[in-house]
Image 1 (spheres, rainbow, N blue to C red):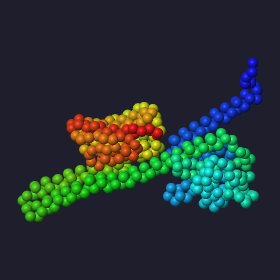
Image 2 (image 1 turned 120 degrees about the vertical axis):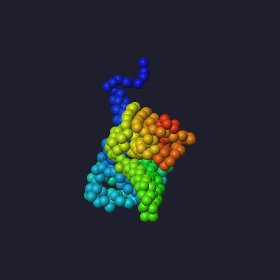
Image 3 (image 1 turned 90 degrees about the vertical axis):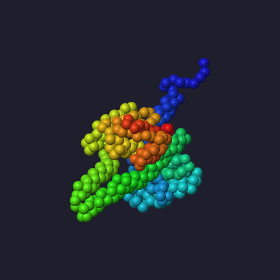
Image 4 (image 1 turned 135 degrees about the vertical axis):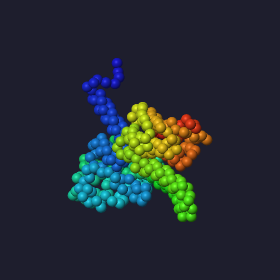
Length: 405
């Protein structure tokens, strides 16, 4: 009977086996790059890793990555490995425009706006110090229609890249572009959050101090007047002084709470559950609260912005408990799932009447509004449940990467 020769030792079977092994290796490298970029805290470190993996995959030892600066629109070298001496030892050759960058920024599909092989204009006319490099593959880095940069790969024993290799490079360029865009969006969100943090601090300081200082001044002026003009009413003057002292103590408590928002435990390299336990311990020591912290669910990677904002939500909620709830016990719970993470801070305090609870907004003073704005930055939902005399529960639910609520 006729048919394909699939004998294990046949040349055709060997070719198919080699092709399968190569495809498996490509997919492994692609998955490694995608996971590394998704988990990366430092974008430049992630690009260094991606560059090394791609160069190793294709047997192209040398490579470098350009990103277009958002502010100046100028290309910036952000990653490089094994540059030839002519480029490594003369930094001026790695500054400014070159053929591949010009064609990329113009969108010229015959140039570096497309995955292809071009002669490196930075090495043109050089004989020494090139390590035999003259050509490189240019891989454009896009995020949708936005041109973000170029990855260049080179080797001395240059060979033409196969169609499946070019397609793989397209895919890698897409993953890198997505990671770069995500990192920039997170940076913008962090900047906006920092700006809002400064505004919130200014509001809190004003609320905590301005009116209290004015009231303290009035009480002391009244006491001074009584002592000067009606010494027989010294007991009333003493009452005024005692009231001023009470206002001073209350103001000091307010300021301490604000300082905790600035000097609370810094996340650093700690996972969020550990940082929340440290935060609870600090508030317990300072304010005499009983605070229980628990976490459940699988360990899921959170972005730095997600971790910092959820930490600040917990901090703001505990500050509100100290300032308003007259609570004795507080429960902080973090629940992680495959699609979202939920943080709840519940107390047994005096509670209050909640007029409404809506997505991204909340009633109440600056504390609740600050929490709502933080959660909104993350695309999440803040819910406030409270009843007079029955405590308050603040719940922030935030979607994980690629999900929505």
